[in-house]
Amino acid sequence: MYQIEKMNKKLLASQVEEELMNYILHEPVEIGEKIPNEYELAEKFGVGRSTIRETIKSLVTKGILEVRRGSGTYVISKSTFEEDPLGLARFTDKYKLALELFEVRLMLEPEIAALASDYALPEEKEELKRLCDETEQQYLSGKNHTLKDIEFHTCIAKCSKNRVVELLQPIIQTAIVTFVNLTNRRLKEETIETHREITNAILRGDPVGARCAMIMHLTYNRQMLMKMMEEKDE
Image 1 (cartoon, one colour):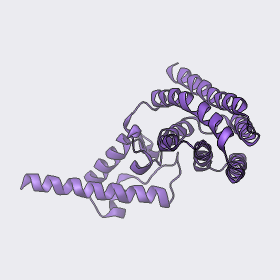
Image 2 (cartoon, helix red, strand yellow; image 1 turned 90 degrees about the horizontal axis):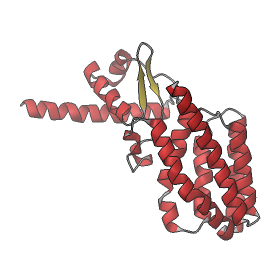
Image 3 (cartoon, helix red, strand yellow; image 1 turned 90 degrees about the vertical axis):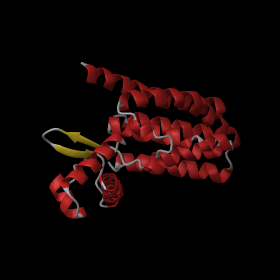
Image 4 (cartoon, rainbow, N blue to C red; image 1 turned 60 degrees about the vertical axis):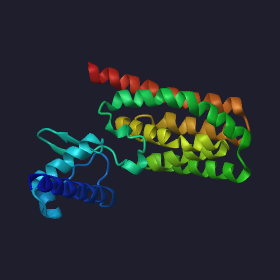
């Protein structure tokens, strides 16, 4: 009897977790904003506060929520399991994860950009230019540019004409989301400038320029991350 009861509680918590995730995504509750307290969530979903606590604990483990003592529970990411098939959200040290993801990006993306400059079709170049423009507009207007940024890098991968590269995109997507969540738009000018340099090199079919521009883009980002890690440890 106890085991059945325990199993039912787990199923309930799983259902509430899905509902809470939907609430965060569709309300929407933006990254950096606080969700309602335990009492309000229990009322909203019609469950006990112990179930809410279990649900929040699960989403904290997955890197979606962060509990700040004396302040409340905040959204720090919106990457669901479908957007994180490698399960990278389970790593709790986001700074270390971001640094390791940069190591992987530096191995991959400069060469992906070089391939894109060789193989991008005219219509793909138009799409890349549009995404570069739209990412810049969202950045300058103060809107959340993360999804558009992901589209931009995904488009470069598609232009490479390498099917394996396209399958590796979840790593790059997770890296972008992790970095944006940590830095909160602290590299606006550098991001706009290097995105434009990458785009222009691909448009003119310049693999060396595309490779160098991507290295510069990732180097700016990595340097900012290193600086933030030093500040955090002071």
